[in-house]
Image 1 (cartoon, rainbow, N blue to C red):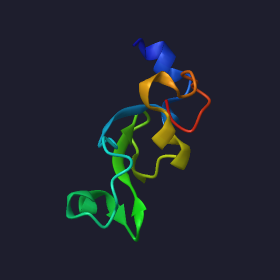
Image 2: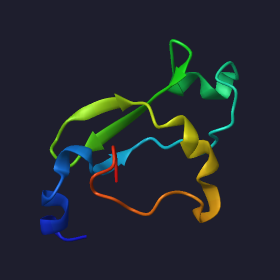
Image 3: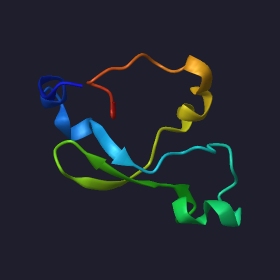
Length: 79
């Protein structure tokens, strides 16, 4: 990816972080405690503008597997 592409919207461009590999896992499962904040799934994410956020991905993301999600969009909440 070119820096000019990231420069269009760095505040919502995820650079690195944890990822929700098991989006359907119960938050009460001990394997999910690392990503549980007051009963909500959260993930440490660093964005291209340098800020770090304990991010909550959209609920509908659980259905985005196998290419069923929206196309990449730099105007979305993350890309």
